[in-house]
Image 1 (cartoon, rainbow, N blue to C red):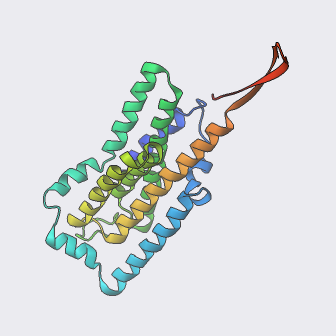
Image 2 (cartoon, rainbow, N blue to C red; image 1 turned 30 degrees about the vertical axis):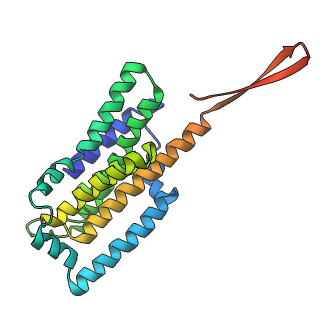
Image 3 (cartoon, one colour; image 1 turned 180 degrees about the vertical axis):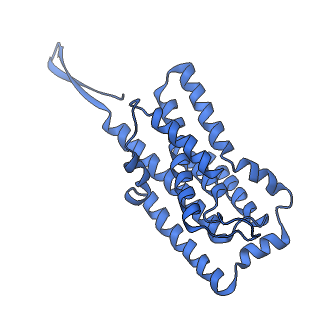
Length: 243
């Protein structure tokens, strides 16, 4: 499912870019490594992921075991599991796409495209790791546990919301993402380091792609200087337009 979500969002982002052509894929895909603050998130998140992985190897994953034993989320984790299939990501993208169609406002399209890119690149990266590392799940039976696809899409959503709309909307979005991610431990679907890896990937892509989009918006702006004739003499007017 994570792979299908990634392919869907990736194709849409490639075909619906601002220029109407294929986007510079390598630049966007490598943005968490090359672009701050995604680079910092990737570094800290990777360190935490490795720490919990080695703790699991040495002593067991007590965070996951306790969550699965006590089930603090009870049956509500099932709702989080459904939402974690990129449902908020799709709703956000759809909302701003409709607003763009109604008003032809380019900034609405940019918001939709940012969510599509963050979700698509993050989900594809997670899928590549899943089917390369082939880690078994806590409950057994499957070997696609690392990283968590639900955590990836949830934190891609939250990081875009926080970056674009500020902490008023960002805090509830990160809380929702944390609820979805913890639900994967509650339901015995992932280890702690799986969830941390997914959260790291999603957040790193959301923040780094937002920064790239903002830099591109600034580079697309045009400065204009116009001469003016006034009663007291010559002057100039200054204007800046955005495309």
